Length: 385
Ligand code: LLP
Image (cartoon, rainbow, N blue to C red; front, top):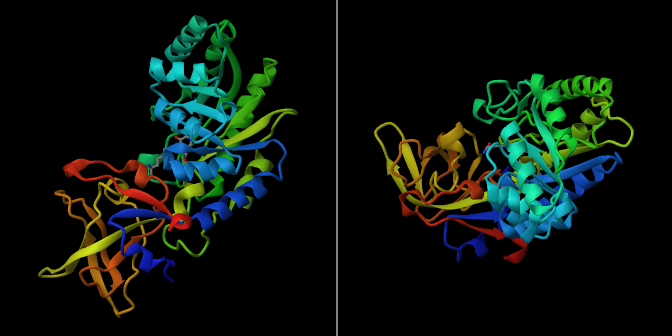
């Protein structure tokens, strides 16, 4: 089954472009609000890194989610979109001084701190401003995730977070500093995770660490378990809204919170992934000796996931109902990896046909580059067409 698109309206828009189905986005946000709302102490942030299109951000902000940022630019984008500063969290292994300053000047909710030297810099920048920075420590839980190696983050070998064995030491250090307040623990094990067992493993680890802290009479304000819930790239229409009920219930069941503690989530892909498609046009159909190519006007500069992670995005010819034929769907960039899919069955293609690359709402537009002096793709909302 193909997606439904306003093809007539597409004809006048220069390709390639991103198209966001805001009905689906709003339904997804409603589902998150409903399912997380079953648990009084759950608090969901949107991971801005997945898609920072200002129009998309504004819709997400209106739904009441907080923002999870990984750079000063993202903090700025979140604040500009109207996310309240007290719902902005800022994580990242390499925060520069101006980025920390921006967070301090705006009194953001929390810095997720990833090393001792970073903690020291935050303390000194906060001291200079006469402020107290709220900090959580990102702990590397050494929990694997069944996902692509490039997007697992919670193993000891990854660069992220503070090792579990160093946790007590950094907490002592924070408690000795006057201008930081230690308020939480942060974790994130990876992205595009569909096996709830991976999240259960994280819960078990968090429970162990919390027990260790209780022995020291420390109960933090909040636990942040990051994001990572995956989407169905094979069948974008089958369950366009991820199973948030199961996801939140898994945490409710397995993570032991102490009275008064809140549980924070940072979901990116699951929020915006399915609502976006990259729309491109067939430039040429080229017959090779063993196969045929559909050469389209979008390339890896517009959607890098297939080239970078061998990621699958469903491809549809939305202009044609002709019988299907197999094509390698390739872009115009001077790189052999500029391939969206090989031997893909598409309704017979001809020059000018519109092609949709589905499930591209997350890590699509935001990862676009200007390589080959290409123009960045524009994102359009269905409701503005
Ligand atoms: N929190 C932290 C600390 C993260 O590092 C990430 C993603 C998230 C939350 C959101 O994860 P999500 O819910 O979207 O899985 N470019 C890659 C994905 C990189 C994810 C990086 N971190 C891709 O296209 O698959």
